[in-house]
Amino acid sequence: MFKEENGVRISKTPKIQKVIFLLRDHKEFVKYYEPRVVSLGPIHHGNEKYQLAETFKRKLAKVFVDSSGKTIEEICKAVDGKIKELRECFEEEVTKKYNDVDLAWILVIDGCAILQYIDLAISDKFKDSGIKNDSVAYCQQDLFLLENQVPYALLEMLMKLSKVEKALRNSVKEFIKRNHHMVLMDNSSGPQPEKPSENPTHLLDLLRSSLLGPENAAKKDEKTEVNLPTNQEAPKASNNERTTHSSNGTKTNPQRSSDRQSCRTVQELKAAGIHVKRSEANSLRNISFSTKLINYLPGVLSLPPLIVDDSTGPRLLNLIAYEMCLDFDNDFGITSYVSFLDSLIDEANDVKELRKAHVLFNLLGSDKEVAKLFNEIGTDLVPDLAQHKQVRTQIQEYYDKKWGKWLGEFVHTHCRSPWTVLAFLGALLALALSATQTWYAVDSPPGPCDKFCEKFNQNFRKGY
Image 1: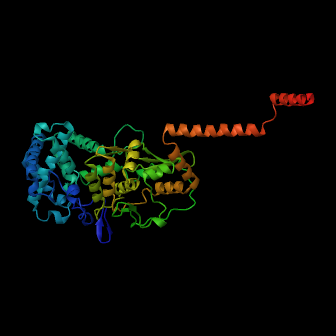
Image 2: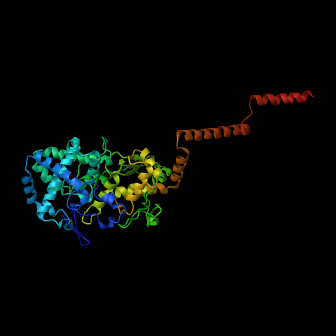
Image 3: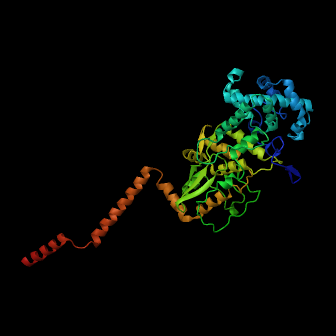
C-alpha cells in the first residue's frame, strides 16, 4: 500500500537507498555509515578498498552453493527470473549503472555469502573458513549498514532453493536474536520483541522490527497505576520540535518555554525524587513512568536495558538513517528511543546512575565516552514526540509539584548512603532528647524530692 506525501511515494517497504542527504555531512560519516570490511549489494560494489573481501565472499558463496544441493547455474537462473522485481527493491539511482545480468550476479554472490556467513556465525565455524576474529566482528557490523542491504526477498528465494532451508531460517532467526546484544534478552515476565516483521525489507529492517516489536506495543504496555493529576493538558508537539546540543555541549530546546514535556537528566530526576529502574520487557518501546505507595513518593522511570559497545553507535545511527528514508512510512521508534535516552544523559554521572540501575551496561570504556556517544548521535534528531508524550507529561507534572521536588531533593542530599541516614536519624534523636530535657526542666510538676527539700527549708528557717 502506497501513499503520496509532498510528492514522495511512501510505504511500509521503502526502497534500498543511500543514507539521506541530511546525514551525509556528518563529521563521522565514513566511520558510522560506510562499510569497514565488505561491500554488499550494488551501492559500494567495485570500490577498491573492499576488493580483499570479494575473495572471501566468493568462498562463502561457494560453500553455500555446495551445501544447497543446487548448481550455481540453477541459482543464477532463479535469480535472473526475478531480477525485475529485485531491481524494484532498490532506488533507481543505485542500480542504473548495472544491467540485469551484472546486477543478478552481484545479488547471487552477496546473497549466498550473507546466508553462509550467518550460518557460520551461529555454528561458530569461522576458523574452518579461514576468517579471522577481527574480520568477523567488522563483517557483522557491515551487515547492518543501510547502504549494505540486499532485498530480504532475495534471501528468502535462496533459502527456499537450498535443501537445508529449515536450518538456514533458524540461523537467521538466531542471528537477529544474538544481535540483541544491544538489548539484553532474558526470561523476564514482560512481552518480548520476538515477533519481527513478517515481510521484512532487509536484515536491518528485520533487526529494527525485532527490537521494537509491533507499533502498537507501547500503547498496550502503558501502565495505569500513575495517579498524577492532569490539571493542564500538555501542548501538542509539532513535527519540528527537537532536542539539540549547542556548540558547548549544553542541551537546548528552542520551544522549551512552551513545552511541558521536556525531560530532565537522570541526575535532575533523581534530585526530584524520581528513580530509574530496568523495565520488565526487553523492547525499546517499553518506557514507562509510575508512582507507588502515595503520589509523588517515589516516582519510577522504567527503561529497557542496553549494552553499549563499539557497534552501538553505527547500529543505532543506521537504524535512524533507515527511519529517515523519505519513502519509509514508519513511527520513528528507534529515533524516539535514542532521543529520549539522550535527553536523560548529559554527562558521565548520568551514565553512572543508569549503570547502577542496570539500564546501561558499559562495554565501550569510560562513562564519559558513553555520554559523549549519546550526545553525538542524539544531535538534531526529530523524534515522534507522541510516542513518549504520556511519560514526559507525567514526569513534568511530578516535577512541577514543589513540595514533592523539595522532598526529593532532601532525600537526594541527606539519604545518599546508610551512614548519612544514620547520621540524620542521630541528629533527630539528639534534638528530641534536648527538647525533652528542656521541657522537663521548665514545665515538669514537683516531685517527692522537691517537696522534701521545700519542707526541710521551712523547718530550717523556723529553727533560726
